[in-house]
Image 1 (cartoon, helix red, strand yellow):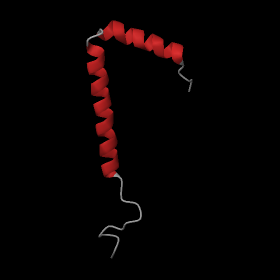
Image 2 (cartoon, rainbow, N blue to C red):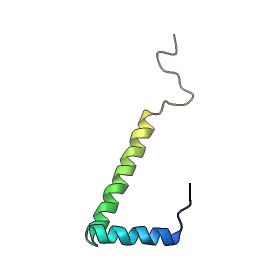
Image 3 (cartoon, rainbow, N blue to C red):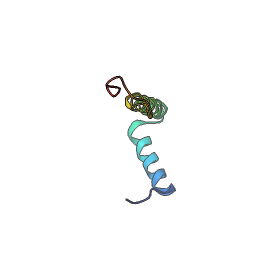
Image 4 (tube, rainbow, N blue to C red):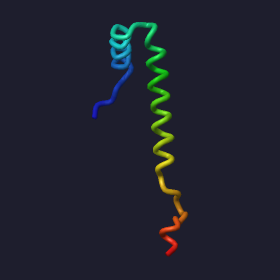
Length: 59
């Protein structure tokens, strides 16, 4: 998988700016950030507690 460097990030940012406009970019970034935060929280909630046995394991 190729590494993404600074020039590539600048090109991506310019393309996003052209597609969405300067007013929409902060809103788009906020929504992506909140979605990522929600996904992390959901993944953390689904993980079983390490070292603890559930009621089913005690029998």
